[in-house]
Image (cartoon, rainbow, N blue to C red; front, side, top):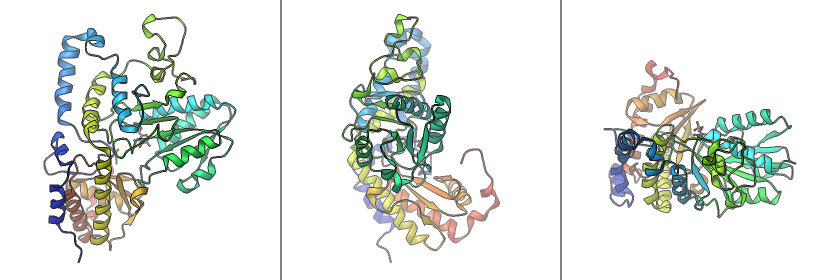
Length: 413
Ligand SMILES: *Cc1c(COP(=O)(O)O)cnc(C)c1O
């Protein structure tokens, strides 16, 4: 018999120092949401903020809002708030554009700074948009760059003297494995390469120390662990020492040294403004700030500890209660090797996840066979882990996933 009972998890919730954060989010009735790594929950404050920015700032103040309501500096202001979460300094981060777009800008800048080298190191199994963007850029540059794909354990060896840039995602979107930012960055610098860190699955999920690791560039998503809302602006980081040193290819007016001088010819800003393109989506930035303000008050060390406890108990419970049903763990078992999600492989994964969602336990499915559960310590309770696994057990024990309804696919999985 295991030591775990529902009461054991209720007791953990009673002693949880982060428990109060849950009241700051809108919680749909009866839902166990384990997909905050894909789309974070809505901060309650977002609704009032959205209304205010629409009714007062846009409706009443109109164009004067660029100055009066701080619209012009919003991307920078939010960037500074994100900087505090990822170990960057003020003036090193902008909240802007989309993740893929920011990667394009950074890759292009890094290749420009290492113009005598032709190799980009990437993890082939990474979230595809990162690979696609690199492939698109290589085609456009037409200068014979190549991607050297390397998986987790091959990365250090792949970083050799011919490498221009190493472009990696810190936490893997499918398996949740966590790469060693410090060791990889050091190795890259040893051979004279630059590093771009994609923080999509780590910003807001674990402590990150970009400056401590001497990272060159980074980017990430606003709508995952940062709870910025669907399609929220992403972020981009350029270490102070590189600002102004590279050519940012999307030379829109907001990246000009003096946008309101309306000069004929392009002159880049020599600070983080060089990463911008043009007018930013103010409504989206405004609600992203609500998520950032909550995250900014959370103690990242405590958050990481709770995240690892949640994922660790989840692994234990699935293996104890669902061990006979062919689910294999795809996430590293060692705490220090994983981010804030747990994935299992199962050939009927798609239908299993649909059955879970029908029972109000929401995770997601990643082809071909991964069911994925994200743990967001600000609004996920320990008892949710118990209840979610009991639900999974019921589905597996009674073959509920065999319901043909659960094999119907939609556009988004
Ligand atoms: C979520 C995610 C993205 C998303 O890119 P968008 O441009 O926002 O669609 C990109 N890369 C990684 C690694 C991700 O996890």
